Amino acid sequence: MPGAGTRPTSRDVAQVAGVSQAAVSLVLGDKWRGRVSEATAERVREAARTLDYRPNLAARNLRLGRTRTVLLVVPALTTEFFAGVYTGAARVASQHGFGVVLYPSPEGIGPARDPFASAQAALDGVIASSMAAEALTAIRGDQLPLVMLDSDPEGSVGAATVNLDIADGVRQVTDHLLGLGHRRFLHLAADVPSWTFEARARELAGRLRAASGTSLRTARAPISIRGAEASAQAALTGERDRPTAVVCDDDQLAAGVYKAARRLGLRVPEDLSVTGLDDLALATAIDPELTTVRLDAELFGERGMRALLAVLEGRDPSEGDIPVDLVVRGSTARVPAG
Image (tube, rainbow, N blue to C red; front, side):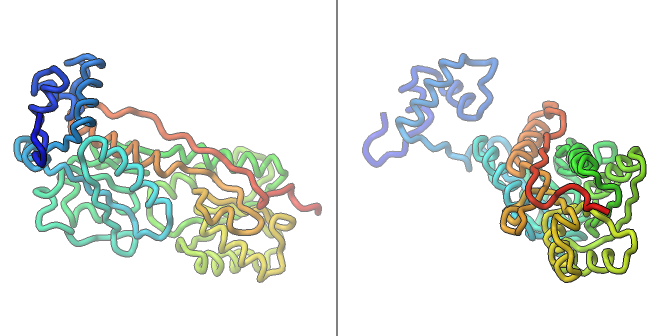
């Protein structure tokens, strides 16, 4: 046992747990499965807790040739969604002795300067949103173990891809609005060149083509309330067959539609049904509360980090898109009479 003021070592943990130092290393390095029993692993963890043991990460990293640091590249932090992605990724990373550096791509998309003197020397891997993919070349992230989020699985540059089931979310929105009798649709699309937004547009158009008597117009807007207000007002002004439902790529765009509707003397949802996507805090701050698709941002980050850990360990990441859910609130109603 260590003396007063002496930092406990792995040997002390091994002695208290009654196991070898090698077993302690396996358990605390989370590589014990199939090598030691669950009971032994728990005994080691309990001993480490009792002794308040902290591994010497610097020494371990030198032995492994790793920095145990991961870069999470996202668009500029304009919504809380990517904060949730970071929270989930950092939670899983900390459980495995990794740290996560959050790097917003300047202006949301496009090239970025290398945040390190040498990203390849400073990082073990990268998790990147497709909206920030162009930053990867500049930071040489595409030459490191890479997991892509919200990216085309057929053309992804990453060793693994993690997606939310966005197509199903759009299907749920479309079916909900069709069920309320809506046939004239406006798609307020994010003016961002990204696979995830292209996938939303394709799914919406395909779903409406399969429904009789429907029409679809598209207007584009930057992901901001002010930009969405201007685009929606232009799209809804002077139309004889005005859309009765607006499908928005993002909750911020939906908030802009609310403002445009008020300027035009239209009521939500009596004259115009509006839907969003993300389920940000904003969705319940506006009146009426917004019907939107809930995306679990923290789970998204967790799955991204687990996929990168699998890549680093030479395992196949788990497959399957993350389910999403439509949350019906007050912004949608039956199509207006006449």
